[in-house]
Every structure is written in C-alpha cells, then in structure tokens.
Length: 170
Length: 297
Image (cartoon, rainbow over all chains, first blue to last red; front, side):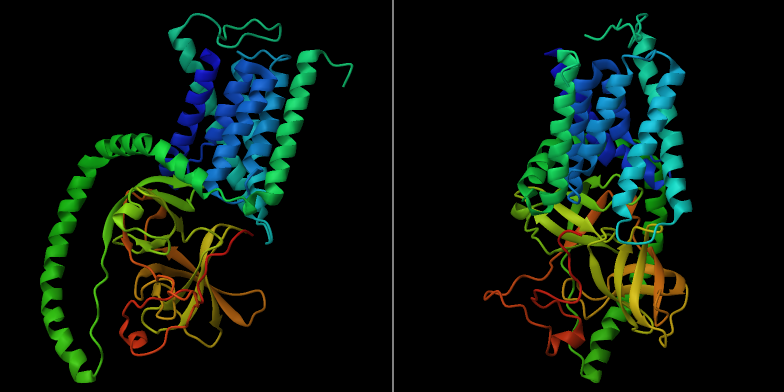
C-alpha cells in the first residue's frame, strides 16, 4: 500500500515538475530529464517489474500530455525501468558512481530516442543533437545523485542496499 | 523463458506487454481521441499547477515589481502619445475612404503549465475554458506577441498549441514591406521558427518585425510573431528561408490573453475571406485557410 502511494506521489510530482519548474529551467538551457530521473530512482529501489510499470505509466502520462507520438516515452521508460531494475540486483546501488553512471546512460539513451522523433523527416544536425544529449546528461546525472542523497541525510540506514538484495525499501 | 525463475519470468512478460502496448500506441495513437484524457489530467493537475505557479511568482515578484514600475512609466508616456494619434487616425482613415479598425477583445488567462519537456514548450494549459467563453480556434497572445491557438477547450480549462509545435503553420507578413510567408517551427537540424515560401526577389532585412498576415484565416491581422534573425535560401535555392526570434518569451509564460478566433460557419462550408473586411483588418468569421493545424506527422 505504501509502495502504491509512493508510486502515485512520485509520478504526480515528476509530471508537475516537468510542466512548471523544469520548463522554466529549460528556457535557461538547464534541461533536467525528470522522467528518467524518477524512473531510474524508482527502479533502483523497487526492481525490474515495478520499474517497468512505473516507467510505462509515467511515460504514457507524458505522451498523452504531449499529444504527439503517443507511446514513445512509454516504450523508452518501461525498457529503461526494466533494465535499471535488473541491473540493480547486480550492482552496489548505494554507490554514488553507480548511480551517476546509471543516470547518465539512461538520460543519454532517452534523449537520443526522443530526438529521433523530433527530427523525423528532416536532416539532423549531429552537433546540435550531441549538444542536446550531453547537456541533458550532465545536468540530470549529478542532479539525480543529489536527489537520491536526500533520504540519506535523514536516515542512517542505506537507501538502496547492494547486489545481495539488502535494502531498506518499505 | 522456462529457465528463468518465476519472478524474473513475470517481469519479462510484463515488460514485453508494455513494449508491445507502446509500439501499438505509436502506430495507432494519433487516431485515439485523447482530448478527454488530457482534459481530466488538466483538471487533476490544475490545483498543483496553481500552487507551483504561486510559489514561483512569490520568489520572482520583487524583481518583477521593479521592472513593472519602470514599464508602467514608459507605457504612460507612450499611451499619451498614442491617444493623440488615436484621435487623429479615424479622421485620416475616413478621408482616405478606409473602414474603421475594430479593437481585439482580449480575455486575460493564466498559463498553468507548459507541455513538451523541451527547452521550447509546444503546448500550454490555460486557466479559462468554455464557461469563460474560450473556444477552440481562439488566438492566444501575450503583450509581446502571438504564442499559439486554443486547440482543446474544456469547461474550466483549455489547452493551447503553441507556434513551436511543428504541426502549426501561420500566415505572416513582414510588417514594413508586407512580404508574405508561412511561419513554421522546425525541430531539426536545430529548433527554430522559420518563415518560408518567400520569393528570392523579395527584400527582407534582419531586425524587421514579422506579424500575422491579413491572409491568415485563423489569426487576427497584425499580431507580432517575431523578429527576423537570419536569412538563408531554402534547399531548392529558389525561395528564402528566414529564421525568426519569437516575439513572446515562450518558455517563461505566466499570463496570456485569448482573442476570439474564427468560428465555423453555420453550414460548415469553409469560405475564403473576401469583401471590404479584408482590407480593414476586421475580424470576420472564417473557417479554414492557408494556416492550418495538422493532425499527426
């Protein structure tokens, strides 16, 4: 029950941030991919099945809001959620470096996927595309790690645990 | 599959179902009427959006207050000058045999949320809907210029598709020379507003203001859209491709105005705009035209 409540809360907060605060930051060139951030954070904690479900629901909500290419975020985020969830069983999830790499790779993949749709039917400026992906990656990855550190400030317990499956997740 | 433990098998099945559903939506998603879903989402999120907007305003209100005071002072001076001209204008128009201008009734609205997730949003949720008289087709603008058009309207909220949506096209003209073109948002090779279909023989200069054209069947004439930023030739080499800097700050929208757009004719048959109203800039009821909103890509 607690997990479902958290699921709904995280999805609503992510979508809300995307359309308000982060839309303003994006205008200043600070692109934080909050969809990836929430999906990776959720998948690290709740593993593959819940990760894929969270990614799918969050992506679908974002797709419906965008009105074009319904299914593009849902597909990418459900696969990312599943992938990160699977990896979380073999990685030290509390390691900052692990989190940084996971956020960076997931953001880069998601941005490349989204850019492919934005650029469909016309020539792609590789430099611009690389810039867009790099910018989102270098802002989202450290920001994601910072977000994951917040619960640790208030608790001495490990947030995620490691590959053996020790976790404080409720 | 059978070699996987039951829990892993379940998650593989789950992700396969999600992937298949997503692919199906990618193929048929444009045909699914999702307007009611967006409407429900907008209603659910409206209180949160208002709260987030209020917090944002709280933090920025001090600076905004200072700049608004400066702006009021400038506008008061300009207003006094315009009042003199406004008194003179009807007399001159009457002498030239022109019809009178009709003011654009503007309804103030709050921008609750921006959609798209990109540096330039392509949609906005507005705080007024059908009950406030906002209808599909109405133009949405700020004091700086055009931002888009209402494409979905629910009882208390509405959704505007911004000019940064690649499916929007607006008939425009260069303010000083009257050179006509079609404004579109191009996402690649880099996102920008482009004024196309301009003959190579037409003269356009960097810094000139581009406004909505009288040929536009969807927007009132004379709303600023952008400023000419760069002039290139299109791939054929026969036409000019002009990049515009948007007149309105599309990524920092908080308040906007809705102006009545064309209403569909009672018989449902679209007609081109003809007659004396075309020359006076009056807003006539009209349905379809050069500028359209495409469905799907």
